[in-house]
Length: 67
Image (cartoon, rainbow, N blue to C red; front, side, top):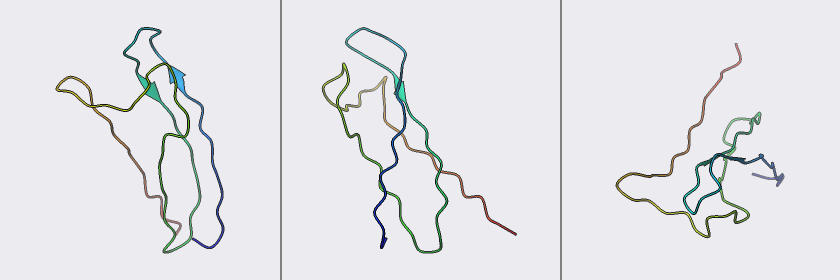
C-alpha cells in the first residue's frame, strides 16, 4: 500500500466486568492489490486479547465489487 491511512473504529463495550465483549466496524474502499491490516491499537478494561473454549476472536470482511 503506497499511502498509509489510519482508520479508527469506535468500540462498543458490552460489560464492565473483567471479561468484556467488544466490537468495532469500519468501511474502506480499496483499489486492486491493496491490503488491510487489523490491530488492536489501545487497551480497554481487558489488558490482553485472549481465547478460551468459550470466547474467541474474529475478523470479517465483505467484498463489494463495482460493476
